[in-house]
Amino acid sequence: MEVKTLGQFVIEKQADFPYAKGELSRLLRDIGIAAKIVNREVNKAGLVEILGETGTVNVQGEKVKKLDVFANEQFISAFKAGGEVCAIASEENDDIIPIDNAVSKSAKYVVAMDPLDGSSNIDVNVSVGTIFSIYRRTSLNGAGTLQDFMQKGTEQVAAGYIIYGSSCMLVYTTGKGVNGFTLDPSIGEFCLSHPNLTTPKSGKIYSINEGNYLHFPEGVKKYIKYCQEEDKATNRPYSSRYIGSGVADIHRNLINGGIYVYPTTTKSPKGKLRLLYECNPLAFIIEQAGGKATTGEKRIMEVPITELHQRTSLFLGSSDMVDTAMDFMTKHSAEKV
Ligand code: P6P
Image 1 (cartoon, protein in one colour):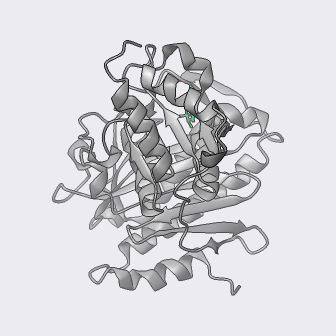
Image 2: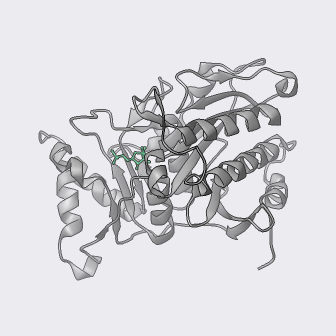
């Protein structure tokens, strides 16, 4: 297959947006640059003084790892230098990061991101990821505002993730399908490796932290038992696969088929995952690949957003599997947890 780099692809696809003057193309390339720098550090994390914890706790109440901070800084500086972004929201920052510098005078976009998702896995050499979501600003000019981020997932202009795994991949959508690029370290370029990615309607993998079983809603408990039943006609029992890095679990399920569930629990009554910079971008990707993403009741991308770090439950993956899980949720919704 001829080598097509991310840069070539983005410019080629720019024609899909008649009014685009290249800003989104440049923004996607800025993301690619930061991803290459983060990948380089993730790949040698065990060798340099970048492992371990900073001794601080972020707004999520989670211990901040040195690589979290490094990744956050890399993406923030790439967006500031690129000039296409007027504000950033990050899992690592309590408030938005407004950008109003010489190069961002006419910036049209805001970016929400989880700079290093699953970072608790870094020290044990398990895949981690970056998740990003891009909106057109709603504010008129100058630095972006909090209001620019209070947009439903359906308003996303683009979204994607980078997975730092056995290879480094960047997967993104601008609403016209999903394309995957694999980093070729020998030329330092992301090359198109998975054109027009689609996810199977069904699969044999379910991904959920069953350690929380006792705290799950009844519908989730019943769905887990359904996944474990013997039924050849519907390829059950499924396989349980849960890495603890959402990007890695969701990427595997996107390719092979499967469902990822992080439901509400008695400990996390609103769910654990973040709507703005985890669930909405992953929902955009999976829907564009032919799958589904819901809260267990409604479409993720329709959920109104009122807080930057708003949490939600997430049922995401192959459409038939998400439908079945939602049937269990509906059927057992009245039953106490
Ligand atoms: P738990 C990582 O912190 C994350 O946000 C997702 O990437 C991952 O799937 C999930 O949380 C893991 O959470 O509670 O199962 O350890």
